[in-house]
Image (cartoon, rainbow, N blue to C red; front, side, top):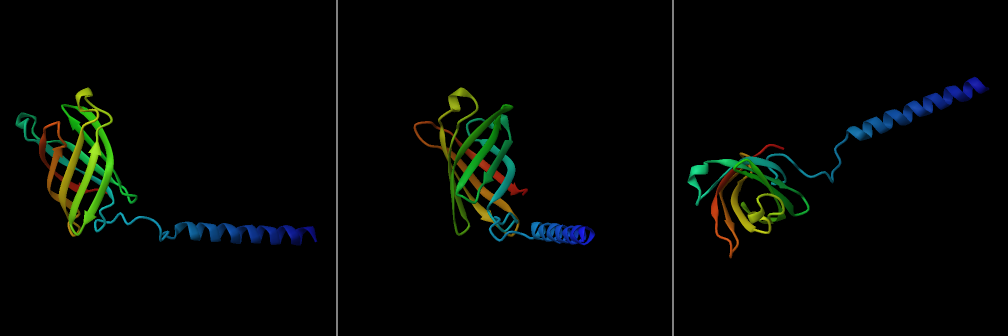
Length: 148
């Protein structure tokens, strides 16, 4: 009787384990679409600053989240800058507004707008323009490609 009980228990546990493994491999329909057709995901590229052409192209990235938030991660003269904010997509027009919370002390608190054209076929954000919101001055361009 004990052998039979343990055999049934082992078969039952094996069945439960296989069921859990199979269900763990299925894609959850609530997962955000991170394909190149979706705006959500990690975007990496470069930016330039109109007032500082001697700097050339600098590192620029956006993490675009499904909840409408975005994180702008850039470098200026090898100094990292982080700026969280919010984003919208209307048709193929991408817009986000961010505020610097980490980086050069003079940039902390600076708010910027970023606009670009979303090309979902190629997974790119093109014709990108960033601008400081007055009273700070500054602007430039950026290009990004989706990596995740």
